[in-house]
Amino acid sequence: MGTAAEFYVVKYGDTLIKIASMFHVTLGQILEWNPQIENPDIIFPNQKIRVRAPEMNGEYEPFPGADFFQSSVTSPVIEAMGYRLIEEGCSAYAGGPDSQWSEADRKSYAKWQHKLGFRGPDADGTPGRKSWDRLHVPAVYE
Image 1 (cartoon, rainbow, N blue to C red):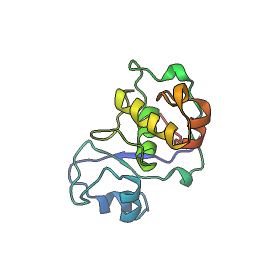
Image 2: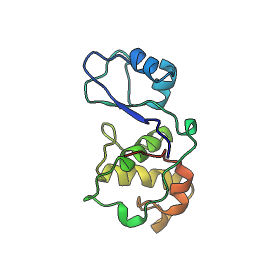
Image 3: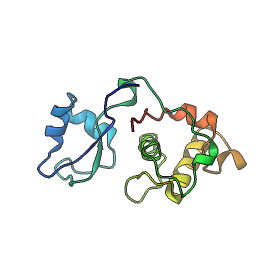
Image 4: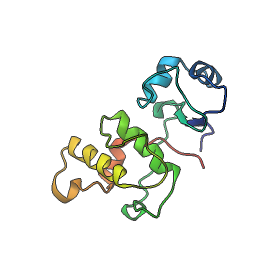
């Protein structure tokens, strides 16, 4: 497993330029990887910022199985999936994704399945191996 962090939790006094510098990336990359940030001058303590692109470490989360995706599950894998769905233009999130499986995750994933051409029960919003493998959710190191 790699050691590169995928996300950074904003601390009081941080700026996006400071965060980009800490992770040796550009402000443009930070903004590209975080489409939920509308104004680069406004970030908040405890906000999670993606600081690595999936391609930077070449590792993706393996399919955790369909039973993983239920409201009782909380995992950083779910949050990483949500950010990938946003990157793919498949967001049904009111805010950003979090680590708890939710209806917004299901609706967003259904958009992804439709984008891939799946229909009917294959596009119900519950991840399957084929659609998951094509989403390229970055590896999460817990």
